[in-house]
Image (cartoon, rainbow, N blue to C red):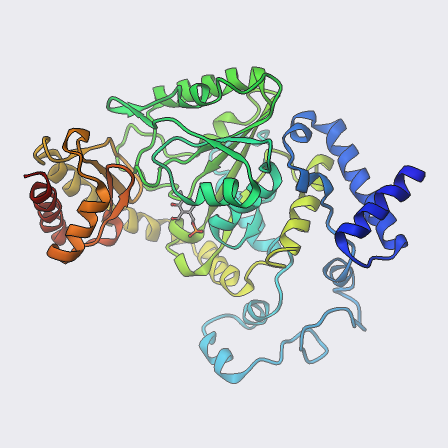
Amino acid sequence: MCARIAAAAETVARCGRLSLEELTLATALVDRLNATIQTGSPTLWACLSPLARRAAYPPDIPFQAAEARSKTYNATIGQITDGQGHILALPAIERALAGLPTTDRNQALLYSPIDGLAELRQRWRERQRRGQPADKPSSLPLVVVGLTHGVSLVADLFGGEQHTVVVPAPFWGNYRLAFAVRTGARLVSGLAYRGQGFNCEVFAEALADLPAGEPAVVILNFPSNPGGYSPTVEERERIGSSLRQIADQHPLVVVCDDAYAGYVFEPEIPRQSMFWELLGTHPNLLPIKVDGATKEFCLFGGRVGFVTFPFDPADEVMAALESKAKCVMRGTVSSPVATSQVLLLQALRDEAVDAAIETVRLALLERYRLLKDLVGRLDARLLQPLPFNSGCFALLEIPRQHDVSSEAVRRRLLDHYDTGVIALAPNYLRLAFCSVAAAALPELVRRIEAAVSDLVS
Ligand SMILES: Cc1ncc(COP(=O)(O)O)c(C=O)c1O
């Protein structure tokens, strides 16, 4: 008990003015969740960040309001309603949402539950699991505010100082912000490509100096940003077996960032997330899926993402982990955006949605094929395409011997060619072909080649 009071006093110093009763309750709750995880999944426990270990979803306003939801007299939550659960909406906002069914419109304007709208979570789960055997465990996806927030939530749960994160380079810069800058995790890397394919040993090479027993996080992003690459069947097998070998030595979280899921353009390249084939293949390996509507449903401004964990919804370890994740959510964004969840629900209920998504994929496929042909004909002394087969992007490498940086080329394109691309240090240019019309691609590639040629000669 003395230790408990000392811990409570320490927390008071950290958290401000909580009563001892509240603190004892919070500490007891955290202890209970931690014990559940330690017993049920020692690997998960070993991977949790210091923040995750002290987190528990508090039984305060949203918790109590959820319990009172169906009561006749419900004075729990600070939403302005008619007393029967209907929002007192402003006419201009109601008019803008006039196409929605009445119940959905009301739901769009009320607070979402912290973990997201129940129907949305259920429908997204069913969609994710299409074609997967029923016995593969996956949680109800937790709704987050776009995939960036999903990555950031995972970083909060599994990052932190002392934790090592591997991401192959070149990589999407937000991983560094989410894991290293925000949580202080050690980010290690290695080259994503070897020859004309993926460097399947990159994770083992990057973790070679990590003492056995230390936890690690690996990020898999296929189709990739900035690379536009998805591994072949054989590469997937090699990546999987390399990760299992790492898991022999380290409790391992594998984050599958599936932002561009489905946008695959070569028939022999698998489309499904590696999350499913890693699931349950090693007791020390925990895959976590981050996906969402941003690219898959072309809902860029909607900010609806999902985080899915490798446990059944009914598993008590999942309940403990979800409590921790909801605590982090509550302390950052409070709850995800209801309005865009309701928009996404309209699409998920639409039987024609897959055909509509396929139309988008076919539009990208046309641009992909054209770009592939164009970059294949570039002067290799000036620019060399890295392998790409999926997603929204292609990378061009400026040969190192020229000593011309991608930033110098980017500036030249802006200043002299009325053209914008992304420069990635030291010598990569990223082309987002998803946002360029097919008809404009030949001129885009011509201008990039001309800009490099100016600087080389
Ligand atoms: C690989 C990858 N993951 C996640 C995201 C973030 O998606 P969102 O816009 O939903 O935050 C992006 C966006 O560019 C991305 O390229």
